[in-house]
Every structure is written in C-alpha cells, then in structure tokens.
Image (cartoon, rainbow, N blue to C red; front, side, top):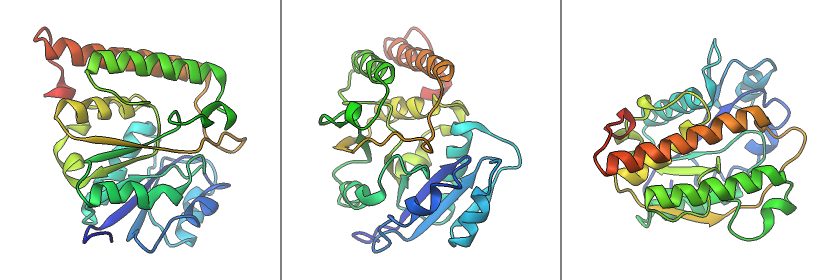
Length: 245
C-alpha cells in the first residue's frame, strides 16, 4: 500500500515463460499488494511459471487479443479491491523499478493516470527501438496531440498506471480487443477530463521482448488515426462514437 491505497500490478501475458520470472523479481513488494497475470492462451508454460511464483493467474482458453487481455486484467484488479492498478508487461521490456514513482503520483492525488514514456529523454533509439517505430511514434503522437487538444510525449507506451476511478468509470468494453485498445483508452481518459502524468522510462528491445510486426504496426497506426479523428469529430458534434458515450 501507499498512502492507504491498495496497489495491484496486472500483467497481460502471451508466451512470456522466458521473461516472466525476472520481471516479477523486480516488483517492489514493499508497496505492491497483489499481482494478477492473465495468460491469453499462450503456447508455452507462462501460466505454470506464474502459478509457481504465487501470482493470481487467470487463463483464457481462447486468445482474446491484447485489448481483450487488458479488459480481463482490469476487471480482476477491481475485483481484488485495487485503488491503483499498474500494467507491467511480463516480457521485461519495462522495468518494474518505476512502480513506486508511478504509484505515488496517483496515491497522493497528483494525477489519475501515469505513463512511463520511452520518448522523454534520449534513450529510445539507443535502447533498440527500431527506427521505423520511432518515426511512426513521433508522427502519430504529433497527430494525436493536435486532434485531442492535449500534450503527451507519447501515446504508445505499454507501461501505465491508473486510478480505480478511471477503470470503474470508462466504457472500456466499447474498445477494441486488439492493440489499438491502448490508444482508445488514453483518448477516453482525455475525453472525460482525467489528469495524465508522464515520467521517463528506459527502453529495452531484445530477442525475447514481445513486439508486433510491421503489418500489425500498420493496422495499429490506422486505428490510432481513426480514434483521433473520432475524438475530434465528436468534439465538434459531427459524429457520435460508443467509446466516448
């Protein structure tokens, strides 16, 4: 706990057998109360490793997608009475050592959501982010800042912390079950007026870290553009979208 707030770490997992334990071992359990892992029908022993580590484990019998996995994560965390929920990928691409800093910004009511940005600072390319992903990240972030009337250094990090209120109030079930879920959720947070903070995060790309391929990246990028346009068009009263109901 931190300032009387229960902290739950959630891990949306798919084929994370090789990296789960070293990610788990860096979690600061002096403040983290529980860990939830949702195994999205992995083809390896991810769920076996999670259970051996004593993690609260949920296994999807069918692959529901990255967004569908997160929906299960957040429902489970709220069911455990979480006040603050931090999503940590079990592929060790993001260090759990930042959890205390992220959680404290919510626990002491500075922000409602906190993102660990790979773009703040100069480490993204040095940490191994492919050049095409870096360029796409910068273009999409610029477009989103213009369309959403906000200012973030990046919208595409997978390392995020949320207050209970965000997860309980947003219409998350209206969002995609695919990767664009992440982006839709941030657009919703901005739409409903919640406060978003950012802190810098080291970038780590390596063989066992999960990463979507070029084709899926293009699909994600088009989804990001669509979400931003939906936001702007609804803002000026031309369309109505379920994700901003």
